[in-house]
Structure formats: structure tokens, C-alpha cells
Length: 572
Image (spheres, rainbow, N blue to C red):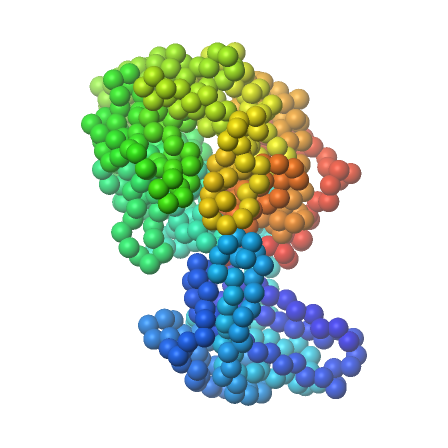
């Protein structure tokens, strides 16, 4: 006899369905005992035996209700034909190897309120449902069927006939969740909430590449309501506290997301009514100056930063130690600022605001004129990472690729091509771009160890999959989007394609080691990793006439749509 177990989450709910099935003979002599172990905690902490926990539960036919702590939601456990035996025991000192490796609290105590006993002779397919809502175990099969149909529909909605794209579409869906009556993006599982920067970078891939512009509109409107002093929130805290405003690039990525929306839908009227005044306000605040020294400098470029503050996406900080200090004029901030001005020039022209259009065009021209003389590193054939007064940071980092990949680029083609070549030579790996070239003395090739060790390597060589999107986009641009270039781009994606269909279990993680064999690290599922892969596949590689996706059946195992449906775990 074999016992098969399946588990899935119900989309849009805090509900988990667990089903068992007896395969073969021998069930007549067997019973199945289940001991639910309760933690009742958030994802940043561990539980330890305590006197505050309420051990009692309420029993009703086919259902149990646990309320271990006052003020927290109750947990309902629906079951079919189970005998309930009281327990009330703490199981102590569970050890989590990964938490140990990360230098975190790795021991936990879990509470067992009762034992569920299923007679497999009477019921060879027992099921139970854990939820914050009252459910009936009789719905387990219908919930499973509904979820299978939902995932099948996602696969069939993929804009490109390609297994990798279908898998990415299913993966992308797992980051789109509800906040109140609107939509938002979970930046990563298991410990990120909705972050402004991550949301704006991920939005085109998660929503527009998957033909869900209505979700994009909801998200853009929701964030527009929280713009303050020209800044987008960096993070919405988990417990509902005030949003945090400590990023220079989130508001600039907001322009990129709006630009992607109108390019996809042509919905200029929505932007005029809901977003344009906010966009204009952001530009105005940057002109006169806002938090943390963020302001337009005399040369038309954008400077930002104060000692001890990290405002760009390279934001690792250990105590008072700023790991990657980028105060002054970071290179990607200039590219984003220039593109924001060009977006506003286009929008103002569409709306007949001629004086504003001319003003934004003049600001953009001034920034572009100042950019190359300040940032071009002639000796290395690429761009400095940060300019701050007379100081130029010559570290070779991937931030410069945005000066080539964004819609409005700031470099002549020969220099743009050189930037891409340097990035390919120094930063490209099978899983994305390194955050620092291995030739740099500060390079760290392993993302491992305790928080201090990991944070010190986070942007000092660690590979970020999301950067493969801008890199491929830049590579295709400097190579005229030729078929040979697109074939090469697909070959560069084979590593991530293989990982997703194997170790990744249908997802793309936050980071990989800079050194081979490039072990995965950080969050096991990251929104912008998936989104940028999806965007570059749909919009840049496959969205060209007479282009056929590369055939990879002989090169790597490919996930069928059915595999994707069965193994990808939806967000609850």
C-alpha cells in the first residue's frame, strides 16, 4: 500500500487543502493519524513554548476552531470522518538548517492541540482544510478542480507559444494579490511585502506582458495616492504603519510603468485623469528638492543622498556601515530621470500642454548633454557608477546597463555597444548579471552566512536575475534586434529556464552566487526576477515578425503546461 499526499492553496484565500489517497491494497488494517502543529506567527519570527497560548479548541461536526492568542484570527480545520483525540502538547526544538546557516533563530516549538485519526478502511481518500474561514472538507475536490482549471486558463492565456513563457505566466500570477479593494504586488516569498521600487519594475512584466492592463491601472492608482513630496513609498510595513519614503528610484520607475501602460494600451485618457497631475508633481518636487538631498543639480542631472542613507536599489546596510555608498549622482538614476522627462514631454504633447512639453524637452536635453561628459570612463569603455563632485566611482556594476536599455537612451550607439560588451564580459552569468565585476577587490563571490556576511555580499558580486531583462534589451538594441541576436539572447536564458523547470519548482529566486556553480539564495520566488524574464521574452525576443522560438528539447528538460499547472503553488 502507498499513501499519496497532495497539498495546494486556494487562490485569493488564506486556505490550504490537504488530500490523501490510498494506492494499492492493505488499507483495511490501517488508520492515519495526523497531529496538527501550530506556530501562529509571522514569517520573520519563530514560536517558543509559552503560557499565553490558549490550548482549548471548539469542536463541531466536521470542523475544529483554534484561537491560540487573543487578537489574532482563528484557525478553522475542516475534516471528513476523523476521530478527534485531545492532545495539548508542545513539540520542542525543531531545527531549521537554512535558518541556522543564515545566523538566525533556528529552533522552534510547535503546539499540537489534538490528533485527527482517519480510518482508511472507511475512507481511502481523507482530506482536511486549514483556513482562516469556515470551510467544509466536502469541497476539497471541487476546490482542487477549480484551481486546476484556473492554472490551465493561465497557461492558455500565455502570449507566446512557448513552455518557458507559459511557466512564467503562471509564476507571475502568484505575486498579484489584493490589498483592501485594490491590487498590489508581493515583492518576494517568503518575507517581502509590497515595495514601491519592486512593484514598478515588475509591473510591466506581471500585468502588461500577461494582458492584464486593468490590474496595472489599479496598482498605479493605488501608489499614486501615496505619493508624498514627490516620492513613492519604498515599502508598506506589514503591520499597517505609515509608508516608508526612503528611495530615490521608486518614483522614477513609476514613470517607466506608466509609459509601458500607454505603449501597451494607448490609454492616455486614464493617465490624464488619474496619473498625470501626480507625475507633474513628482517632477516639480525633484526640481525644488525633496527628502535626503534629492534635487536637480545645476547641470540638469539628479543628485541624491545623505551620509548613512541608502536610496538606490543597492541599499544594503549593516548597522551604520553603508555597504555600497552611492551618494551623489548614481548612473541609473540619471537614465531613469532622463526617461521620466521624456515621458512627460510625450504626455504633455498628447494633452496639448505645449509650454510644459517644451519645458520637459529642454530639461531632458540639458540632462543628456551633461551625462556622457560626466560619466564616460574612457579607459574601461563603459560608464562610471557614481559621480560625486570630482569623485568618479569606476567600479564596474550593472547599473550602467539602464542607460542603454531604457526607451530613451543617453549614449551614442558606439558607446552603448561598448557598455553592453563590458557587461557581457565582466558581469553576465547563466542566471543574470553580477552586481560587481569579479576583478574588483571588493568582489564577494558567495552570498552566504549570517546577516552581516550576506548583506556585505548582497550587491558586491551577487547575481541578480532581474537584471537579465535590461541586459538582453540593451544587447538586442545595439544589435538591431537581429534574428541572430535574439537567438543568442534565448541561449543566455537557458540557465534560468532549466532552473525554473527543476530546482526552482516553477519560480525564479531573488539572487544567485556570483561564483560558479551559482547557488540560488534569498527569496525562493522574486517578483521582478519573474517579471523581467517574462517581459523580455514576450516583448523583446518573441514579439518580432518571422521569429521562431529556439527549440530546446534536446538541450534541457522542459516543463509541459500540465507540469506547470500541477506543481506551481499559487499565492493564497
